[in-house]
Length: 175
Image (tube, rainbow, N blue to C red):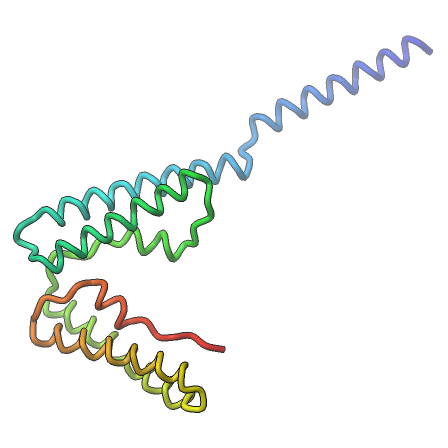
């Protein structure tokens, strides 16, 4: 009986050792997310360096230089949050990874104008849908003006910051 108990204990101990070795070698969710986190941090650092380099370029102009500086700060802030274990939503990461081009081709400019016009139409429709609530209706009216201003600047080839374009593309969301 004693030998049988020892054999059973030995078998259990072997099984536990085997299971433990499998557990430590298998990629866990935290290992995978740590690798993804590291890749994201590397991509954010690269975007930040490009933004800083573009901000220092005297040929981009004052508005674009400021835009690049703001974007570099966004990337740094997201990196800091990730490094400190804070949750960062994917849209915020994507925004921080976006590096605006130094210049726009006529086709890119036309596409942006079309996107801004679509956002402006949605703002106008939202205003009409929410006239019963003046505060919400005002949000749509403000966004419509932002889109109109960005469209005007793009059409006249004036310098327009990406922040203004981003603001113009936003459409308020209400239930």
